[in-house]
Length: 159
Image (cartoon, rainbow, N blue to C red; front, side):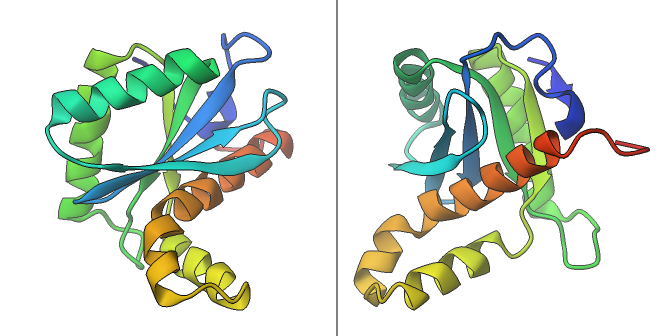
């Protein structure tokens, strides 16, 4: 696996392959898929975490089924932009994922993605119980959409 900057993520990924967004939590992994044109992110699934190998097998099955060519993994930066223990765990997950599935990956700042997801679901009138069932995959879609929008906007200095 190659860890890339968001602006370089698509280098070498064949046209028509999707991107898979991941919102890593301690108990679940929210997943979102891009369309084949890599413009729209859609919530896909919430994986209940068990053992790392089983988690990777589920992700590998989705990669094969949906034609995924790369990953966008939310990086849980602190509000001041610093990295704490959750970032270290996410970076380790990325390294382990790269050993299991050899696809390019970029990190995307996920600060406030869960808050944004919850706000959208509340505004949509979803009950608290139902929100709990979908919030992780909606947060993954917000992470992935942010990266897709950044890629579509073109390169900026220093990225």
